[in-house]
Image (cartoon, rainbow over all chains, first blue to last red; front, side):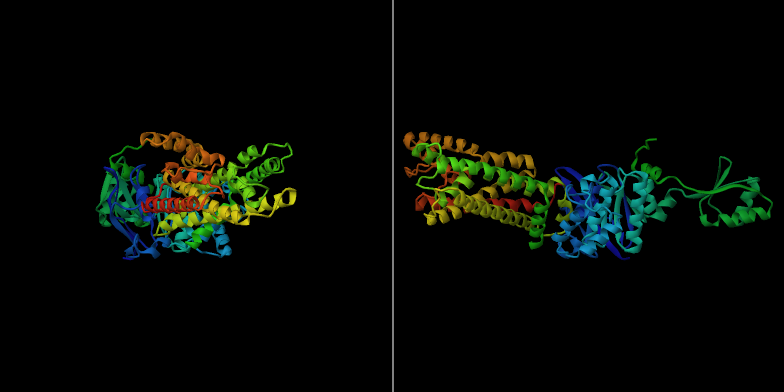
Length: 303
Length: 289
């Protein structure tokens, strides 16, 4: 596997409190890796260590197989947006980018204008950052993280506080960066439903420890993803399903729940129609990621 | 490091606070010019001894070294504005969280200290030279009593005051880096730059003199005499002679060779100490943002 980032039992301790406790994550090149966890779970601390803003108490991290902290050329490969974007409020979007570009020795102003266009801020002209909406600030924060042309982008709660339109815009930007530019993204969010729409791999972190690391498919299967079927003749339907080779079945609430071969809904309805059984309802369902998360961390959902 | 230095200069040039400080410097320059007119042109016939105290540097005539000292040293707004500039330069990236964007990019964190310090030194040096030359130029044109004399004292004053100014501001730089907050750095920086700390240092001098059985009259003259331009000293150890704020505020071009050398050594020692502490702080590696 081509891992762009791995952490090896990375730990950050403040006094006797371990904010991050022997966390080992594995981020493959091209992943959008969603880091899930409550406030204080250790997500930001982990991201700060990878972004070079905090020094691990023990453990290490590797970027492209080389020690991320001690190999100097690895740090610019990482772009970070931790918590709120750090911007000079009295500067324009371009000036904020220019400031970072100067620090990195980048002289190409057109490149910076291109970054603004990429995040949809090309028409902000002389508008100062303090006059930006939260969504605009977050997008400028992403553009700031892209100045060093990173291979890995670390985004801590980038959709926090955004309105639905802002969230949709952010989703588009993440999709563009991942698909069109091939940037690997490590992203954390409290909005699990939203995270599940963009992430391809997940790490669940709780009280400083990594509880689980799984691909999207693995996680969805653990969320009991299934086909739910309601027909005019449930007992004959069960017989037909057995004949078709389905074994992971469950009957509850006048429904048949099928936990395997979820893409064969069409074939099932055709087979039932041949036997003159009417399909009243067939749908693909799953537990919400949030439910699974609470089940895993022992917490409760606040409805 | 040169890129980080250029970044700080770019940011400082774009900052609103720099423009405000520039305007305030202009306003205080005009006020100081009016005061200088009253003192040097003496339209109100103030007695000579009183004028000496007002100028702060003994000597006769409206000559460059007295003008220079009057504008940059005796007149506290200059050093106070430079202190505010230094505090804002140090805290600008921390207070806005901008440091998050760049801190992780560089392995050698001491680069941040030296780049920012260099930006402070270059900015202050530019302002210092411009302010001095402007004060000389304007007084040379506007004051009838102006004489281009005692240039050796002017150059001595110009250089030593500059070294002391940089040392004092480097200490402010260190204190602000330690607190990582504008308010903490500003309060302590202004206490030092405005001369409030001098009172404590002078009191300590007197207490030490009392404990060690020295002549208190000599001690009082040594410590307080400098503030009113008296150059005679007893030669005994005085703590305030080694405190950079006091050394800066009491320095004058008429000082003898030994005192001038002491002032320069004190300035260099404080500068080196403050930079060493800043470098140690940078090695902490965790950035607060």
